[in-house]
Length: 335
View 1 (cartoon, helix red, strand yellow):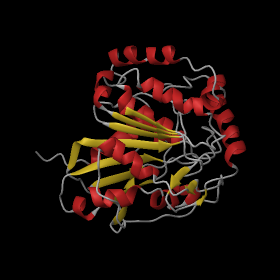
View 2 (view 1 turned 180 degrees about the horizontal axis):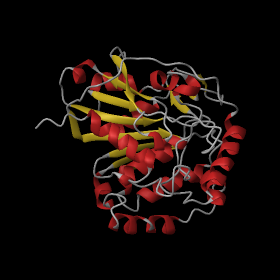
View 3 (view 1 turned 120 degrees about the vertical axis):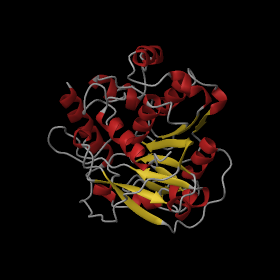
């Protein structure tokens, strides 16, 4: 069943996105450092399949994560291992049974597969859906907001759907025109989604500045089951490198948006690094590898339908375990 779902999703991705570009070789110094991470300032975000993964990681590790941003994606456990659900309501909109999905939470909490949902009460969530996005139905993103409102005050969940942009990451001036759906899926719309997102998750921030600090890499090779590339990207402001207390934001790319497909375009162009530089934030960019064989995932999408196993949306999911391990490796454990 999982391979069938993966195959169907791959075909859908090709029809929606076109073929991925040839991989670009990326190199940077290895990051073998631990940082003074403020445990109250760890957040996640993602676009498209990355939005699904951001939501999954948030719910699975709600004790660790204090907020999530979801762009052009849907809610935790939407597909639930069903091909018809993944290809139908979770993309096209329609019959998304919020009661059934929310009902999965308590048993998984009881079994220790996800953190206690009470941790979500104080969190903040920012959900975005482009007004011209015809790849994912707007009701899918709206359902994500409704899911979160089961566990937190509606005031903590912001839903933005009035920016006239296609299925992509809106920026101030980087990328294609707002109405152009093409790699690297960044759209210059005079709208700083990264900044608006981060300010909702963290509260008022200093204005962004030039991202002049180091972009390092973190090895992903130990996490073979997670179907990741060899390296993740890590943006490290100088203050964080020099021992200052810093937050950490994890940004999940979308399908056909990893370093294999677009090089460092998303990592350098999405807008997170400029805010990170002026607000003492590290930004981790995990990377999924593409695969034309089992699992069939030619565009390097994050697993939100089960190609890495049945527990993909829980702590046992290989990709969730890998990202958690990378986060832990970045935190200075010195007493």
